[in-house]
Image (tube, helix red, strand yellow):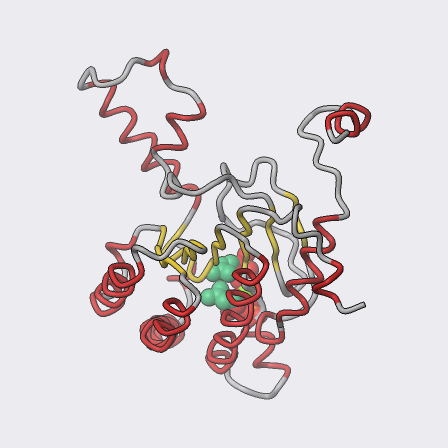
Length: 250
Ligand code: IPE
Ligand code: IPE
Ligand code: MG
C-alpha cells in the first residue's frame, strides 16, 4: 500500500511546525559551501508545503530564521535573506493555486527592507486564501515573543485596560505572534538535533515531537508522510489515563 493511503484522513494534526535544520551539514557532505545547502533547502520547503496542503493540514509553521541566527557570518545571513526574497517571489503561484495564505511571525521590523516589502506584498496577495495558513518564523525567538507579550500585557494593566486577575491562557495566547493559529499538534525537526532552539516554547506545550536524521535539503513529501504516520500511532493523553482516552473514543 502506498504511504499516503495509510494516512488516516480523520486524524490529521491541525497545526504542524517544522524546524528545518541541516542545510549546512548537507552542503558540507557534498563538498559545497554552506549557502548551497540553504539554496537546496527551498525544494524541501516546496515539497513540505504541498504535502501539508494535500493532507488537509490547516496550519504549517516553518522556522526559517531565529533571533540567534544573526550571529552567523554576514555573508550567510545576507544569502538567507536573498533566498527568502527570491523564493517568496517565485512561490506566489504555488500559494495561489493551492489556496495558501502566507503570514510571518517574529520581530519582522529587524528584517532588511526588501524582505519586509516582499513579505507584505505576498501576504496582501494571499490574504483571502483559506485552505492552509503557511507561517514563516523570521527573526523569531520564543523568548523575545514572551518578553514582548509580557510588556504589552503589563501596559494594559498600567492603563487599566486589563486586571491582573484576568490574565489566563487565553490572554497570553492573544498576545503572542501566533494569536490566530491553533496550538501546535506536531513538531518536526530534521538533521538529528534534539532540541527546540527557542522555537514556539509556549505553543508546543503539548505537541508531539518528532526528530529525524534526514538533513533538510533531502526532506521530501514521503518523509513528511512518514512523520504524519508516526504522529498517528501516538496516543495523546493530555494528562488523562489511557482508559479515559479509549472510552472517549467509543
Ligand atoms: C537550517 O540549517 C537553516 C537555518 C538555520 C537558517 P543550518 O544552516 O542550521 O544547517 P546546519 O545545522 O549548520 O547543518
Ligand atoms: C534553528 O536551527 C533555527 C532554524 C531552523 C531557523 P539552528 O541550526 O540555528 O539551531 P541550533 O543553533 O543548532 O540550536
Ligand atoms: Mg542548524
